[in-house]
Each structure stands twice: as structure tokens, then as C-alpha cells.
Image (cartoon, rainbow, N blue to C red; front, top):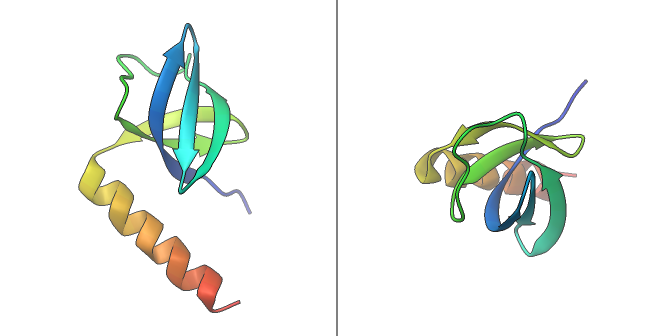
Length: 72
């Protein structure tokens, strides 16, 4: 099974972005996407941003992740 997690872009340097995953910051390669801006939400798989999400969809997905993790 593969997992992809949404996060919010907080900084961009060339083809890399600092992405906030609910307080955990990671560097992510954004070269597969066009027009990524600070404040965008991206879906990240193994260190690569693979798609963009709107804020509403990202927050709904993060809420579901919280529910899953509380059940563990």
C-alpha cells in the first residue's frame, strides 16, 4: 500500500519546498507540479509533491487522518 499525505507549502526554494505536515516541516521536491505557491496544499508521496489540493479538501483529508490515527 502507498500513502500520500497532504501538507501546506510554507517556503519555496527552486524546485524544493518546505511543507508543513501539521507542525512537522519537511523538504519536498515540487518539480513534478506547475505553479506551486506558498500557501498551496500539496499531496506528498516519498518526498515528491504529486498533486495540489484546495484548502477545503486538504483539511477534510487531514481530519480523516486524525480520526484514523486516534483509532490505532
